[in-house]
Image (tube, rainbow, N blue to C red; front, side, top):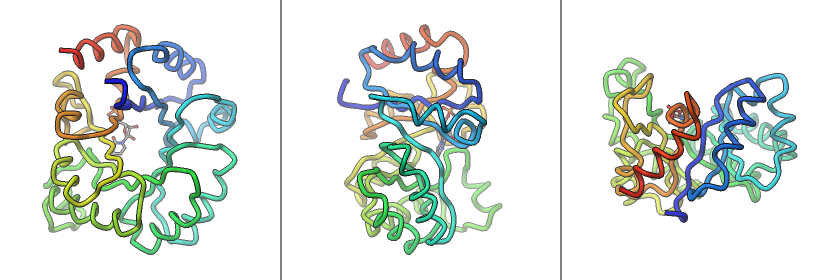
Length: 224
Ligand code: C5P
């Protein structure tokens, strides 16, 4: 179990809450990393907090989605944070992905495919005609072309993605219960690992309510 990673999505603007999340999720039997996204990194003290965080796997979920020049400049601007992972939307285009990869150095550059909050109906709504699985596979091929280090998709697409993309596969949209919130393409942690995901992103199922109890529930689920 230790070889697989779980990134805890630290989605809050409250520093004490984030400290609590880190305190209750370390030294467990799971290999844990911390994902800081738009909410925390844009908060007043968020960036500063991350800059001081030592000896943790840090995942900056910036979800860059811009022209090549801006993506490159944003990566340069975040380099002082010494993060381990950084996300960019595959739909930024192949040129942006290649340029970002060229500048990212030791940061693992993660391509984000179709968000796990979208289903076929919503994809159509925003003008995509391919179904989710086909689009994700298409984007996995682009990620391979751009030599990205990791790829984000839902756990439902991992088996297909593995045929095209051989590096790390990271899956959000993970649920231990039937409460999906805003997520559409979900699976349980066990199903995700069984399908071949290397790392999972879990937010609310860990961070909402009793964190200690949630972590124990997750360990029990993975050991079942
Ligand atoms: O609370 P929950 O487990 O749904 O949180 C999922 C986390 O993963 C959020 O921080 C969200 O921004 C992120 N994410 C996602 N779907 C993607 C990429 C990232 O849910 N495709």
